[in-house]
Structure formats: structure tokens, C-alpha cells
Image (cartoon, rainbow, N blue to C red; front, side):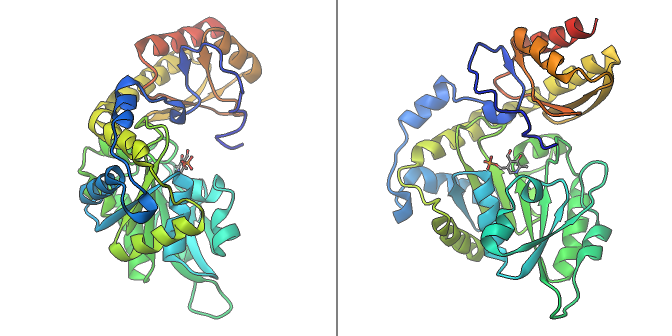
Length: 348
Ligand SMILES: Cc1ncc(COP(=O)(O)O)c(C=O)c1O
């Protein structure tokens, strides 16, 4: 069952705490003010100063030549895949990764790229051996191994830098490129305690989402070499993602980097507190990392639990058997307390 199962409620009643995803975050007054006062221009003509500034800033932060602002993380990953690969090429990807599982097979459907999915380890990492085992020989019967797609964080887990580098190095040694789906790049570096460049060094291109834990309403960015970003910009046009006065969105992203990124550790702390509270109830299996908690109730009763939590003002996902809960900047201590109280009253 995917992370997205049973997510759409279509309901907009009062919730104290919406834990379905960090994508539910809304722009607060300060972000809206930044958006309202953003300088804008036609970005397809390269004339939007807010987008140019964001692209320049992110390229510098990640230590690459260039960047291109994207409407979504899915489009950003696909533009990167199309920039690295041609028809009949193959990418290697973790079998739980968003590119493989949750992007409607866009790489195959739209880019004619086959996907070779490999087992990930217990924290979601692709091992060097898994990459080695997936490399195809240079034989005209086979697709051409061209790209390794990594992800970090994976299901809330942070992959250490040495593991990222080890997998990437096998790919580089075999002449492949490496793309990192860093939808939650800033959650990862918050825990790794490293510079953005250190994680970005593990890949040739990196996609980062502003619309998740960073709390912007829309937007992702792809960062890489000038050559890759020039191709990705063309691919974005092909996919219909060229935007005009989207500086209002870039301003939200820049605001998030300034004001939300420094506070991400608080989301991780709340996820940890929720996981501890669930463990103390001893009613199921609990796994957590960064801003995510995965809970598998021993006794089932998922629909009843969900209804009980909803009545308590807490919205959780509809996945089965493992429920995913995500903390984010729109969940404060009051929301966390409501969630913990909701679980306690259901189970005791
Ligand atoms: C790991 C990962 N990559 C990519 C994406 C795609 O982002 P978007 O929803 O902006 O297309 C998501 C979305 O949740 C994600 O979790």
C-alpha cells in the first residue's frame, strides 16, 4: 500500500493537527507578505528576479554551477532523468524510492527510460553491491546503464554521507551519472549536521522540494552542472512546466530557507516525542526518523482509530497496515499533545 493510500479526505473541517504529510503546510502571514512584495518578471524569458535569485542562491548553497526552479518534485526528478538519459537507457533506483513507486512511471512513460529497481537496506539505502549487481554489460541485447537515482531522506530515515558516497562512487566508476531526489534534503542535513555541499557532493544533480517540511505552497528546484541544468530547462519546457511571473513562489521558497529551515529540528523532536508516546502504549510497532513516524497497530482497527483521532481534531493517513504520520511546522505543541492524547484515549 502506498504512502498516498486513503490520504484524500476531501474534508476541510477544523483540525488541530494534520499529520498526513508535510505537504499540507500552508503559508503563514510572514510568507504571504514575502510573496505579496516579490519582484516578478517573465521567467520563461529569464526575467524573474526572485526566481533568478533563488536559483543562484541554491546553486551556491549546494556547490554546483546552476539551478532551475520547478513546479513540483516529480517534474524536477523527471527533468533530471531526461537530462541524464536518452531513449533506451536505464536508471538504477531503490525499490521504495519515489521515482520508482510514486511518480506514475514517468521515466518510462515519458522519457523511454527503463527502471532497474534494487532492494534497499533497513534504512532505505542502496548499497554499493546493489549498484554493482544492477550494472548492465555493454551488450546490444541490454538497455544501457546510465543513471543511479538516490534518495535522502527515505521514509524519514537519513542515509549517512559515507553510504551515499559509496553507492555513488560505484556508479561514477562505471561511467554513470548520479541524481539525488532530495525532496527532504533540508531535513537530512539538519540531522547529518553537515553543510548542504557535503550531501550535494554525493550526486551530479539534486532535486529539492520547498513544498514539504520547508512549508512553501509550491515549488522545487533542480541543481547541477550548467550543462545538465540547460538540458533540464529545455525538458521543463517540453513537460509544460515553464512558468511566467512565478517569483511569488520563489519568494515563498526563499522565505522558507531564511526562516523555516533553521527550525526544522523542532519537527524532528515532535516526531520523536510522538514515537516515544506510542511505544510507551505498547500497542504496535513504531519506527521513526526525522519528521516521520510509522505505526503498525497490533490489533488492526485502523478505521476506528482514524475516526477516533479525527473526532479529537487529529488527522492521520489511511494507510494499511502501517500508518504514516508526519510532523511539520503547522503542528505545534498543542497539536502534538492532541495527537498523543487521542492515541491514549483510544488505547486505554
Ligand atoms: C521523496 C519524494 N520525492 C519526490 C516527491 C514529489 O514531490 P511533488 O509532490 O512536489 O511532485 C515527493 C512527494 O511527496 C517525495 O516524498
